[in-house]
Image 1 (cartoon, rainbow, N blue to C red):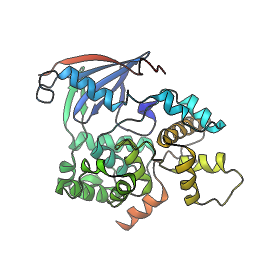
Image 2 (image 1 turned 30 degrees about the vertical axis):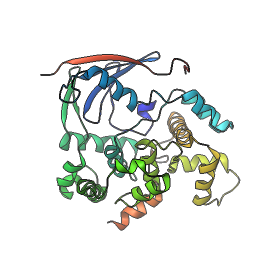
Image 3 (image 1 turned 120 degrees about the vertical axis):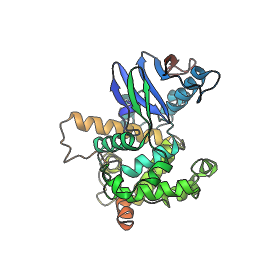
Image 4 (image 1 turned 120 degrees about the horizontal axis):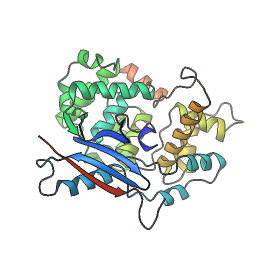
Length: 320
């Protein structure tokens, strides 16, 4: 559920698990009960001394295995809609994504379905990213901001980015120049961080909240896309036909508590999968991870060996 819940778009099913990359580390992972087993490519230059130990820590951090899910779930409001989403998404975690990769991916996501975002991510990785191997598989890592900044807009458009190519390239150039210091922004309070991210080309309020949640671990951030807007309007305000977007934002920022980002992700995944199982067509029910304000802003911008490991997927004192 975690890897198929619309927060990250490059992991592929392989054998009994998933194949992907954490930054520039190719990884194969599979879940066996409450254990996650992982295989990585040994890389002494990246992990001098004890590469298996450091890779273990990297993977555990990425998948947020330290998040106390029972406590987080208990903080949600106890209404029927939230209860159903919480039960359905038992075990789903918010991934800690690399900042540039998360920002770039969600710039590419504007007005796109999840399947299309995955295709764009794959093409960008294959054409501009690094190449690695793990467990007999080839893995392409996400291209750096420096590499994207050197690409032409035409080259990026050839990756099915459309108008998003201009925004992605411009943002990459800000990162390359140092004007946009994504790591330093970690120290900013929520309001300042949101303002900085929103000032980047191709970023509106929804994408900024996604970046805050998935890259900066601001677990209170509550992105509102068309799925979440539909849930809020139909399930929480069924009798108010003209409720404003501002009212929905104010409601979500207070009602869902300190872990509102987790609540949002559970509501999103539950709604999307339930709708898909009900047979609603993609044309009538899109899987967009973007909102109108993002579209409006964009329009204005016209020899290695394998190492295996296993780790617990929940704290021993707080088993999910």
